[in-house]
Image (tube, rainbow, N blue to C red; front, top):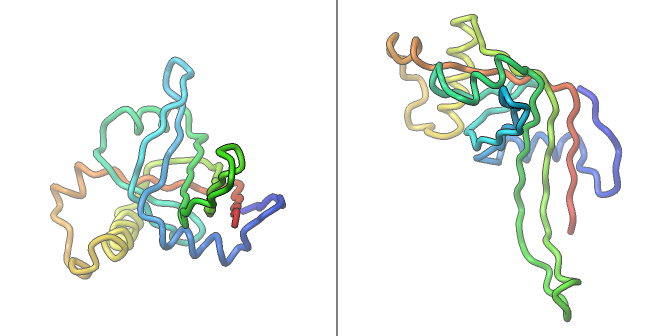
Length: 155
């Protein structure tokens, strides 16, 4: 995982903290006509990868199977910084942008491990419960292998 340095750069620990705290990520794929397609997804950061799940068929899955290079973005910590003029008003925020390669997870053990992490993040009351075989079959789990990650803030 490579991080680029910029002004107002988040540290590696701040990036991980934001990835762990954020509830929605925005997945950018490219469709068959070459147009960008952005989809909000629930996700988990696990073992230096991003995982999300969804139906085993659909536009976002078809896009990333055809074109595995993706962009993934999260943000948080919003508040407005008011100013005397509209042009000077700003936003306090943190954001992370990831470029990587997406692929569906084939290993059943890895798929279950990712789903357990997603359950622990979003519905911890269901942690430890088993997944029905029919649900595992109709659910795709996607891993984004991180190639580059940047985090910015403005305060």
